[in-house]
Length: 290
Image 1 (cartoon, rainbow, N blue to C red):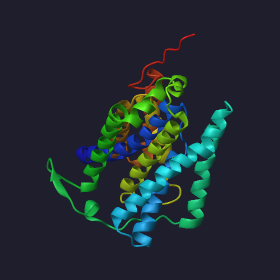
Image 2 (cartoon, one colour):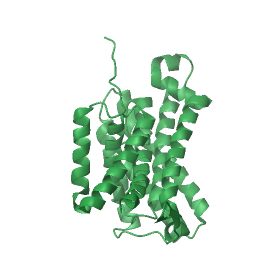
Image 3 (tube, rainbow, N blue to C red):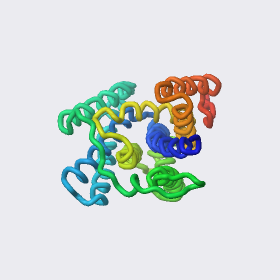
Image 4 (tube, one colour):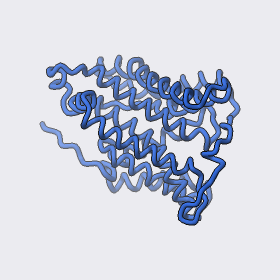
């Protein structure tokens, strides 16, 4: 039972980690976060269902459409709900991103419908194979592989590519980066685009395992933000590992006590962990010069 819960938890944790990486990349580049991240994940799942199931498009094309749409939506969030307020030195982007998430949730509610829908069965979900004496769905193994693979890709992108290095220069010092000819506005938009991309991947991977509805992203978004803080929001590998840790803890709690206590115990553990480590399990206190 606990081995099965461990595999399930790693899959869920990878989803939380992917969403939390979206919080990480926007925070380190712009010192802001997208509180509509959960809604973006929901949007990815809904678009995937619409193009693949409703319109009958081939799955690979539907996936490309989802990733493009979610990436573009990330840029829209930054331009509409973040940039105008940051330019004025206002922290109102906090409420603006929340409000934009609520708007997209309700747009989906009126267009997609109120009733939850399930993706059609695929071999990734219906087939099983033997893993350490346990029958496992390929989807349960694919999710952590994709999640960790994207974390590696983000690390390579930020350290080995021209655009990634420009983004990291903005992280270090926006004023100095601007003097070096780096377009800071584009770097910030790129960070939000990456955030939307990660949410889109999470939506695609989670869609076959959960029913799809306009409200599905709310709790995922809250958990992902908790994971980002728990991991130390400035540490990408800490964020990803915290996601895996949270997912495994959640699955173990469900296996031991039942789903009734899952959220109560899991969020209590988060509160205790942050009380003991205010900067996150893998974060470091920021040193400010005065």
